Amino acid sequence: MSCPHGALVSDLFSIRRTPNSGRAVFASEDIPADTLIAKADDLTITVLLREYRKEVCIHCFSYDRGNGLKTRDSAVGFAYCSAECQQKWRDDVGDVGVAAWTAVEMLTKNRSREDEEMQDVDDPRPTSREITQAWEKVANQAALIRLARQGSSSKQHRKSVHAAISAPISPDVMAFCVSGILLRYSKPEVWPSLLALATDSKPYHNANDLLAFTRSYLQLLAILPEPLLEFTTPEILFVLSTRDSHNSFGIRSLEDEGSEFFGYGCWPAASYFNHSCGPNVSKQRVGRVWEFTTARDVGKDEELCITYLSGEERQLSRGRRMERLRRTWGFECGCERCEI
Image 1: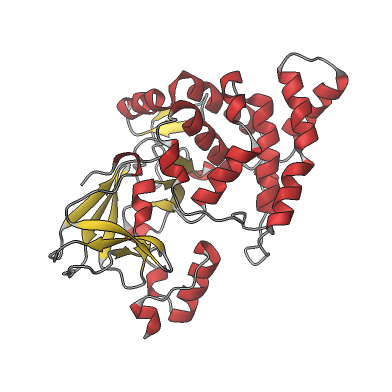
Image 2: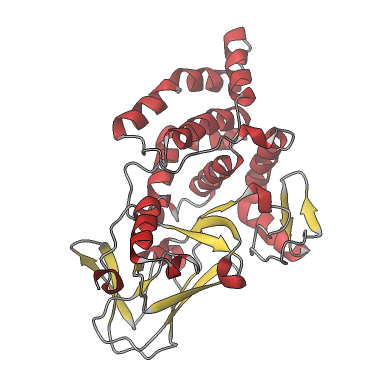
């Protein structure tokens, strides 16, 4: 029932390929309502939005209705519900990870939130060609920054580093990049489970989103610990974005139908479940683990589906649900509820 490293395994269901939805989960037998069918504990990438970092534990995501947590580490910019969670987080990221988050916090903590540009969700997504051009545009500056990190003290190299760290900062994009780079560095055995996820070849929401990633790339080249520079590449950052785009799960408050959105994470095993606006499987986050339970009696060979919509979104009209799913997840919903 547990799903380590992206392996979704149970006698209750099987994974099959489908014509329109890639992989999907199907019941191997009749399953009664309220049956716990799976747990996904394979959290890989985590982004805790900066505005919640004093209120939400970075390790277990506990939240006390907006009250600040007492256990804090100002060096890395995170708070914890307990000293135990703090130690678990430090053990998970390791010494290099702590150094990386410290460097990021030093860069961002005194910068104005005005650095974060407002983004219009109605702007078109960048094309594949525009994405390629954007990454190629920063290649020369990236090469100069790498030379500076190798010890070059030339004026040109120093100016490249200064230009990178002086540019506007997107803290949440940077957090995503650091989390993914650390995954690639410290947990290579988990990387294949991320690569196996469905991809989105055009993952950036709009031009500003793409710009935030290329800027963050240069900034991270300038500040991250030396062991991470090998994995701080456009190729790895693009792979992370292409897998995260359609596979991330929102991290929300556990009360009031999740009205508080803290951030998001990628649990590869959980991504095997497809969406339905009338799901037969409910999902519930318990700390860092997602639990999946049948919402009604399910027949053998029936696809097991969750909903990608938040509590309030589930009440939207068909047209608005379709718009939300198309904009956020990039697909047209053809579930039974939408076909009616």
